[in-house]
Length: 261
Image (cartoon, rainbow, N blue to C red):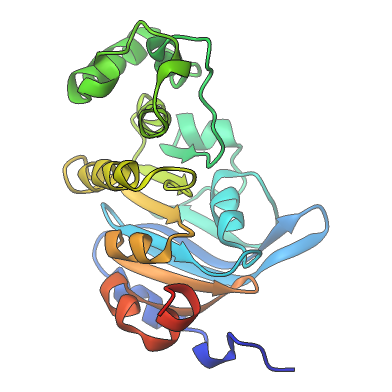
């Protein structure tokens, strides 16, 4: 039986995905079948993203977008396929190893700030698995220097922060480990429009100026595709269409199904 997503057509092949990220490939997923327990959510999924490139995953609820982030970070059962970072296989590493050994950080969509701890204490929690705590303090100071909003609140409990400031703190806490890859789950969720713009400006700065590779899931498809270099549209655990963010914004089928057009 046909459904509304059938118009998206034939899934893009590996060659097409590689063309979108041809320079300095940083992270790849090949033939990934993954899910939770015995349930497979992702089916023969491929992904290619270059160093300092941003990739946005969009699609209907239940399509497997967050499962991709979970699989990269080590939160799912992987039945087949492999994940590589800079040519080294990382498929079976634990989340702690992904963070401390290979530089992948995961920023949750849930409010993960500790409300009664100070902003500074929250920030330092990002370095709890660092061998050298001095490095965590040094990185925290660099972050305070960079973000006045956090610097002005460093000794106050995190519960006084606005929604946008909390999201900034969550992103900044992930930066304490100096990751090269940021997995960002729903950065705009629950935020007022002015804070959504602020969060995407912060992500753009991290990509352009600090050369972070960013893979994000975003329900606000328009905002996500405006930000990202490339986008994948997921349907039923597979990529239905892939392209440059700007091209997907102009695609009438993507617009009708996901952009309210």
